[in-house]
Image 1 (cartoon, rainbow, N blue to C red):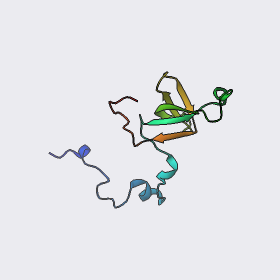
Image 2 (cartoon, rainbow, N blue to C red):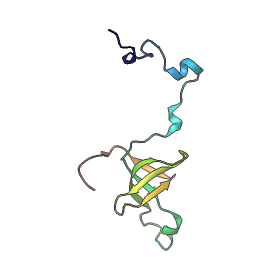
Image 3 (cartoon, helix red, strand yellow):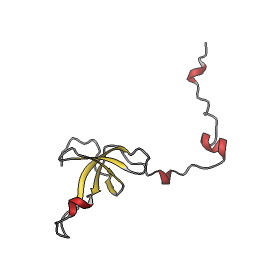
Image 4 (cartoon, helix red, strand yellow):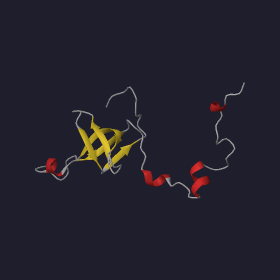
Length: 104
């Protein structure tokens, strides 16, 4: 007895399904996909920078845990205080283990 629900419909397609239907190649460079749980540095809000010296550290060490509602920003969790940020200006460090056991 053959179960049809276990067979993939796209096994013999030479291209991805979205290209087969629309003839448009998907552009994944525009998506800005990042690794969940990776370390990142969020640019501090302007109100936190007042009164600091110009050579002081301005980034906040966080971990990325999602995307914003409209997809234009990242949801970040500060490592030290567990504050949550919605930020667009973020630098990622994806080479450091996202779920490594070692702490900073």
